Image 1 (cartoon, rainbow, N blue to C red):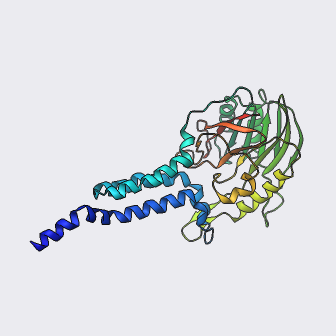
Image 2 (cartoon, rainbow, N blue to C red; image 1 turned 45 degrees about the horizontal axis):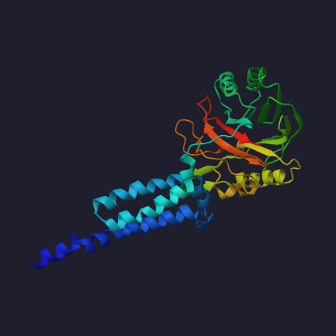
Length: 321
């Protein structure tokens, strides 16, 4: 009888609440990480940047924790999951809302075309079909460049390249120059930054195209992003010194906008409007590391385009001036 009574107590409301405390504690932890990812230090292994890169996916913890909460029949645990659910909705729910795109403005396309793209001409043709005003490309190679130039020339009579990055425009480009975003120790032949002035019907716009260094993730060293972060600081300094008021930055920044490693750039620019627009990897996109950022303008819509021969998806954005 005593054993049955004790077993009944363990199965009662207080017992279920005790068993749900672990789920509730994890729910609090997930909420804190969503709201305050900056509390996770970047040493060792740039753990903070790694968390911020995939921050929206932390919302998957809610349905994952709901399963044990339901199995344990713990109302306490189930109710506690409202905290991370609401935090996620506040932070990212707006990305799912319908977009009201104002009249006028520019359409731009950003794409890392891949230096091993098997069919550059087909990729160029697909990008031209988006009928953008500006197209920025990264990982251009010398053998592939003529294919992009030939296919894009009829619609984009103005273009400029610097190293492995390029810009195609419907409007005249002036004051074209490379932007030095080389990390220390990288040779002079490494050129992945470009600046040009686009003379549009809306006035002059400074357009930057950039490809920040890649990062690597390994179990031993975590996120290796030192060179990318250094390159981001150099790019931020160039944008900060830009005398033209309106600026559009297009590029493969090799991280998401939540990553603190990109703060030297993102702190100077306006965040884009709704749309996750995941761009990498192309087969199963989990993050948008291809970015369209603006100053004195606003990205009202951003979306992925169909896959090309690259390991990135192109993204298109509408910019209201």
